[in-house]
Each structure stands twice: as C-alpha cells, then as structure tokens.
Length: 427
Image 1 (cartoon, rainbow, N blue to C red):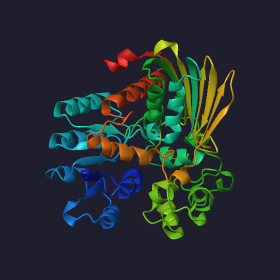
Image 2: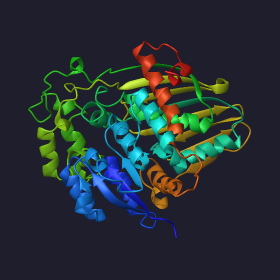
Image 3: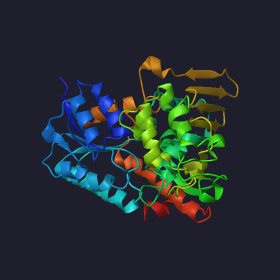
C-alpha cells in the first residue's frame, strides 16, 4: 500500500482552494490535507469543513502555521508572489517538502537563497509550471523529440491573455503592480519560458524584449469616465472593460449566466447576483481600469536565442477576444501548429501526410491548464513518494525560466538591449 502523504496548504485563493485542494480530494488513496492557513476566515472554514481539518490545524496566516512543529509531509505554498520564499525557507528547515505556486520570487537573490536551502536540507521543491504536465504540451514534446520536423530552427508563440483577464488580474487585481508582486512577464509567462527550455532541451543564450503599459492609464480614459464603474459612468455603454459587463452580464464570465467559478469567485467566496454587485460597488474589482494603481505591461514581445542557434519569438498581449496559447514550431523537414484554445495540434511534414491531434479534456476528466493541474498533483505526489516522473519541474529546473523572464524585464526597461544570459545566471 502506498504511503498517504499528508499536506498543509498556505494560501486558499483560486490555486490553493479551487485547484490543488480539489485535485487532492480526487486522490484520497495518495494524500490527505491536515493543516491549512489563510487570512480570510471564511475560506479557512470552508476548506476545513470540506476536508475535515481539525480546528487546531487551521491558522489565520502562513506565519502562524509555520510557527508550529511540522504538521504534514508536504507544504503547498499558494500565497502571493513576494512571500513565497520567506514562507518556503522556514518550511524547508522544518523538514517539509514543497509544492510552490509560480513564480518562485521576483527577487533573484531570494531564488538563489531558496535553492541553497533546498540543497542544504535535502528537501524537494517543485514549482507549479503546470503546462509542462498537460497532455497537450506533452504531445508537442513527443513530436519534437520524434524528429518528424527535422532539425528545429525557430519557434513562434503567443499568449492571448484576453482583454477581461488582463483587467481582472493585472489592472484591478492582485498582480497589477510589480512593486508589490512581480513584473507581468514573470508572473504570467514563466510558464511559457519553462516550456521553451523543456520542449527544445536547450538553454537560452541571449534575450531582448520590448513592451509597455500602452492603454490602461488615465491618459486613455474616455470622456465621462467615472472612477468606479457603478458611479454614474458616462462611458459605460461603449466600454468593454466595464466591471458590470465582465462579472454580471458577459455570457462567458458573468454571474447572470450562472458563471460562479473564476473570475467571479475571486470577488466573492459564494458568488450570487447580490454578492457580486456588492463587490463591484465597494471593492477593487469595480474600479475604472483607467484609474487604478497598476504599472505592469499590457503587451510585450520577447526574443530568445537558444543554444545551437534556435530562435524563439514570443508575444504576450492583453488585447485579444479569446484566450489560450498558440505555438508554431518550424524545422528543416516540417512544421507544427499547436492551438491551446482549440486543444488541437497539427503536424505538417513537408513530404508527408498531415497529422491532427485533438484533445477532449472533458472525456479525459482533466481540468485546469489543458489538464496540467491534474497531472501535476499526481506526479508531485509520486515524486514525494520516491518515484522519478519525467520532466518534473524541480526548483533547479524552474530557475532557468526565471532567469529568462528576469533578463526579458531587464532588456525591456533598458529599451530592448540584448542581455547575455550568463550575466543573469551569475548575478
């Protein structure tokens, strides 16, 4: 019989409560939640009741939980970006293995300190680069490794952030300001940079980047805009970023259409018409997008030169109607287009038949990030229990994606200058 891994979770937001806790619930033969912490007592009560966590194992902060003797085999860290390392280092010293939400930290020295502590204590740290675990991206990896495209020469990728996701998370929401969280490319696209390293099997040599906060500033506010969407805004009718449209009337995201999961469940623990309207009236998600304290970019392009001369061009952009990632891989014998929004991969050899892969996530009963959330949790628990899954995103492996993102931000703020990766790795 497998050992039942005991788990403590700090941070019961969308990832901690709705993604990882629910994934664990589906794996009762592998893991059990035994301690939780969050600053919101309502979230603590909900998770405690759902997972039968004793009152004396429920805490109002990560610090309070970490002040106790070790309470579980594993600590899942889903707090905000900047406390990740301050929470992780004492946890490692107490003997926890760790599953950490990305990014590790926007501070390179913090990343290095965590790596040193993990090596010294001999504990395991896995970073949640969930896309690497999805059947979708694993098929891309298999095609590239299989050689049907010949020698890979170039990759072109785009992350369609989606207009309403941008304003929810990066204008009104928790990741709006790099001074309190992370630069947007690190927060959003360390996923993608991890993929580029893993899919190609190559490290990055040079980086250049351009990008800016091009639209969500007071200078771009339409005539008659109010500071809050429900405060008599005269620009409301023609504004796609209106909070009432996004959280109430939008068929994809609005509570009026029964959409009580993300993003509405960020505004209210139990989304209803009443609780969502109240949140818009009084909370941060009802602010005008042109009058927030945001400073992160809303579009950015990053160019990578990988080992062996392979080039990568990657664009992240807020101004898209739909979400998902699209990646085109180009080799000497063929090309491949992978469209995550449609869950399809088309492989086109130059002198052979086209192969189309179509992923049905509902049929496979997988959720989150093209199925990656489910597989990540399964393989993390296997790793903790002594197995060695291929492609596990260890702390050492994750560092390369962070190096790239930090180099991209350095290039961007210095007008697109070329950054040698060795400068970042040795900084």
